[in-house]
Amino acid sequence: QVQLVESGGGLVQAGGSLRLSCVASERTFSNYAMGWFRQAPGKEREFVAAISWSGGSTYYADSVKGRFTISKTNAKNTMYLQMDSLKPEDTAVYYCARDSRPNRIPTMSREYAYWGQGTQVTVSS
Image (cartoon, rainbow, N blue to C red; front, top):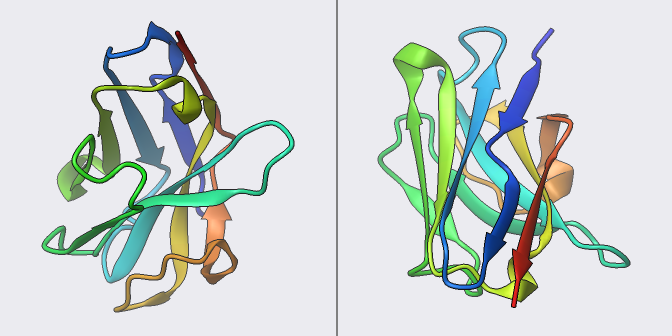
């Protein structure tokens, strides 16, 4: 059973930075893409970023491109989301997820099979 645990959320002022981590319970990164999604109150869950199993390819939502960086360390079963220049509209619960199929990099939440419990990020103005 794949388990994902996020950490690193918190309260930060606009313009600040946070780094989220997602630790997997087993060596689950091989051949599977990983992604970050977020959900703000009253809104649908939206794609933030995704990374290939090798780490060589990354994709970002337009709203975070140039401010967020996704990365992973397979040896530590850990994925990261470095968030810089944070804005109040980045406030949401952030979730990490693992793709349901190998060797692709989806951006739709329905393509991901395993999810963490989420970590709250709040950006004050």
